Length: 564
Image (cartoon, rainbow, N blue to C red):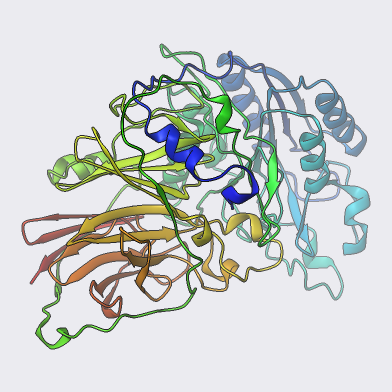
C-alpha cells in the first residue's frame, strides 16, 4: 500500500496529472538476454519409468532455441548431475536477464513442499525425500539470488506419484500425486504447473505430454505476451483431456515479456521497483519513483486536488433510503448458457456486438503507446496508467505501481480532455486481516468506476482466494465525489468482474474465483444492500447490457439474461 505521507504530499501527484503534452514512453530496456535450463527424466531406476519427458524436454528446448534462448538440455539426470546442472546454470545467469527452467519427470510433494525427482532417487520412506531429490524451494532461492529480471519455472512433473503409496503412516502425500502451490514466491517469479495443485497430469499417448506439446507450439506464436501463451496452453490441455487436466500458473512478475517478438519490436522485460514495506500488513509493493524526477512541460490548467479516502469498514455498511418502497430493481431471467473456449473473448465481443470495455493504455514496460490522448499522462507521481475506460458521462483512468495494482482513480470528461477529479484509494487496498503468508496477494486494486446522479460507484478486488483476506474482498462502494465521504459499502465478495453496470435502481455485478461459488448480483445502488443473486457455472469476467439483454462472459460459459 502506498501512503503519500510517507513520501511526498498528495499535491505532487495532482500537479503531474494537470500537465499537458505527455508523450508515449519509449521501451525501458533493450532486448534482454535469455537463458534456459531444460531437464527431462524418463529412465527411473527405482520407480515407474516414463515415456515422454525426454521427448518433452527436447521439444521445449527446440522451441526456446528458435526464439533466442541459450538452452542447456539435460535428460535422465541423476541427483548429482541434476544439482550440478542447476548450480552451473544459475551461476552463469547475467543480472537483468530472463531465466527459464523447464522440468519434466516425476515430482512429489511432502508436507506442502515440492520436490523434483532424479532418475536414481531411492526413497523407501517419506523422510528420505529431501536427501534424494531437488527441492523446488532451493531452485526458487537460487533464481532469486541471480538478480534476473524474470524467472519462469515450468513443471510438467505432476504424473502419478509412484513413491508415497509404499510409505508407512504418511498422510502428507497420501498417494494422490500432484504438486503444491507455493505459499511464498520471490518477486519476478512466474511458475507454471502442467495441472492444478494436488492433481495428476497425463504422460500422453503420443511422443509428448499434452502440456509440453501445446507449450512447444505456443512458444513460437509471434507477438504474444507470455502470460497469454500459458493461458492458450491451459485451454488446449483442458480440451484435449476432457477437462481432467487443467494447467495452473502463479506469478509475482508484473512486467511484460514476449517469447517470439516476430515482426514486432524486440521483447523487453522490466523488473518492478524495489519493494517497500506496507506499514499496515508488512506486505511488499513496488515503491513509486519520486515525482520530482518528472519534468514534462507545464500547462495553465487549474489544479484539481486529490481526495484521499478514509480507511473503509471491511464489512457491509448500508445506507438508509427514504424512498426505498418506491424503488424498482432489475430482475434477471436466463435465456441461454453456452460453453466457451476460454480464450475466445474477442469472438464473444464481436458475435454479440459488444463495445470494447477498456481503452488501450501506454505500456510502461514494453513501450507500446496505447490509444489515450496526450492529455492523460502515461506516468504520474512514479505511478503508471494501468486501465482506462469511459461511459457517456465520464472518462476514467486508473494509476498504480504496475498492472496488477491501481490505488489512484482519475475522472475526466468523456473525451479525456479535462481532468475532473482525483481519488486516492490507497486505504482500500488491504483488509485488516490476512492469512499468514498470503499478505503479498491480497492487494485490492480499483477495478471499475462510474459516476451516476452525482455518486461515484467503485469496485475493488484482489486476485486470489477470498480466504486469503478472511473474506474481506471484492466490494462495491458508493462515494460522494465532492468530499470523498463514504455513502455505503456493499457486502464483500460481490464484485471482482472487470466491470459492473448501473441499471435503474440497481447495480448488476458478479463475483467468482476458481473453486469458490460464482454469482451474479443485483445491488441496491441507493443503499448497497444485496437484492438478489444468481448462481453461474464459473467466475463472471465481463458484463454487457444491450437493450434489455445482459450478456455475461464467465471463465467457461457465456450467458444471456433478459433484464426486466
